[in-house]
Picture 1 (cartoon, rainbow, N blue to C red):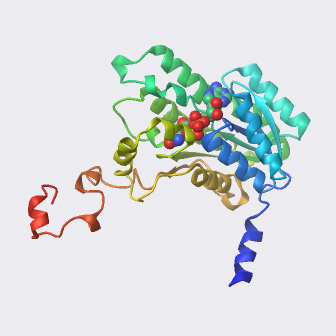
Picture 2 (cartoon, rainbow, N blue to C red; picture 1 turned 90 degrees about the horizontal axis):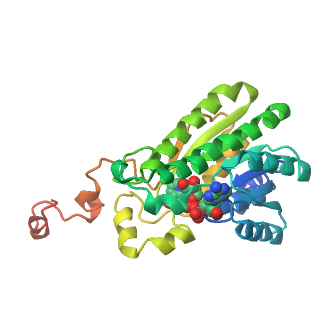
Length: 293
Ligand SMILES: NC(=O)c1ccc[n+]([C@@H]2O[C@H](COP(=O)([O-])OP(=O)(O)OC[C@H]3O[C@@H](n4cnc5c(N)ncnc54)[C@H](O)[C@@H]3O)[C@@H](O)[C@H]2O)c1
């Protein structure tokens, strides 16, 4: 039914025409996919990243696709820099309608240990980027959104903010706090038509993560998903675009998991071979040989 397919595409194209978006950490990974997704649907995007050349490369890709974007090198943990970011966005485009607080101190996660082994500098820096940076950007965005009659914010949380782990103490605490910050913002400014939701990805295979996780580790993590593939930045970007758009006009204050089912099953699932269909039937020789059955 080609006509119907076209109709669906026309409906979903251009959801961000006339809108201005700030995406932090948009030089790479999930943030870059979000910036591209917003620009492809007509939004003008401020690509903010501590890595200025990565921000410029993302902006160049958007421009090559005939989109509109502005690259800004910024550390979101710095209050003055964040104020300057929103000033520049407003002068270059107009006041910000959409905000994606995506930047995260991913480079610190290898040093983010269990509580007694934790370097407090790692805790402070993680909180400064993930939590304080998110708060600073929200504080700059909210007044303009109120003045324009509303806006939408997505905070990039993580499954790590919903379950305990043997390490990643600071990262997990920062993401759990981002969930509550999202709920607070949704509660305090919903009357002004500002929506705020958190997105909690599971394992999303960005270029940087791919370079860090060997095949053995990837397999280990995938055993705990229900879907048999890794997540991609584009999967998260599609959810973020939905939550920013009017398609999600009545959704606010939520934490939405996008994890291939990682948190959706009983903890013993992965020990059972990861797929009931793949297990030998009870009573067979294979079952007798398998202690998991
Ligand atoms: N990849 C995953 O599996 C995964 C899972 C759950 C949540 N997340 C979250 O998604 C977000 C993006 O992760 P990613 O995997 O795409 O990471 P990434 O490292 O590929 O990209 C993060 C970007 O943020 C930028 N950045 C870091 N600190 C910054 C700062 N202080 N100011 C401005 N920019 C800064 C980096 O330069 C980088 O371009 C993070 O908040 C992360 O916690 C990722």
